Length: 316
Image 1 (tube, rainbow, N blue to C red):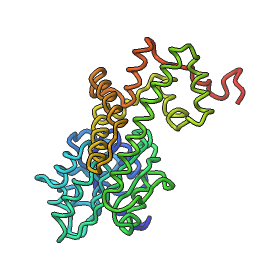
Image 2: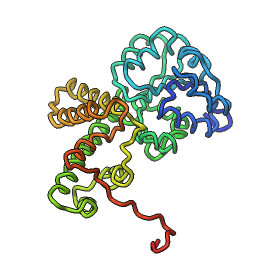
Image 3: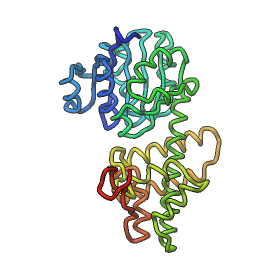
Image 4: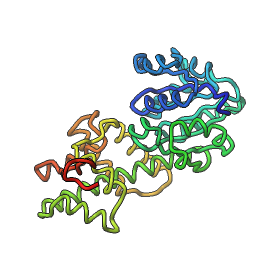
């Protein structure tokens, strides 16, 4: 792939993540063919020169490689192997990259059914939330053949941070790494909500407590950065819904079960997330479990955001 002759990328799934990813592909000069259940989700892309396809099969047929970014393994399977799916349109030897948070079984079944077609299949799920998708700074974890991963790297670099695009192993390794990252982040979220709530209830100033955690061996990226969206703005990240967060937790626990590893802590975290989903709804932000603890405290947990540099009285 050269900058002078970029491949046509087919992209299926224009949700909160896919919208930003396709916009960055388009801005990087990749010709696009796009498909989604909602035709209107492609309006801006089509206005910028992308071609609309009426099906996943048509998307694959008109593309040099096709990407899926879809919410569940079942939807991925339908988009690939179902009627009008990718397999009906993709040429022999073609490339399918699944960037969804999914499970190895879906891609394994496709590889088994298409061995005679020599398809190049990669799992490349992402981390970085909708903000990372919008800014093109996603982390990308690629599972599959190393040569195939290297060949499509320019496409991935249009959507992610080049320093954080990692080939993590063979087929399925990308899915596993992403699920474990999600599991640990969700566990950090619940633990952070518990610690801040108990500290405040015990009479410690919230800002002082957080500063102490940041200065301690218990610090984490979530404590230092991610939780500020809640503490400063009451933003629980509605760009990723609770329904999807609970789906991801279920997938990670299913993966653990398949390995024979007992994951009691992950099971408890999943229970907390499901309680939050029941309390605040499927579309509530993925950080909504924090609200369960705020409800116990009896008030939102907030600290003032620092004034922007240049504000009178503020030293830059």
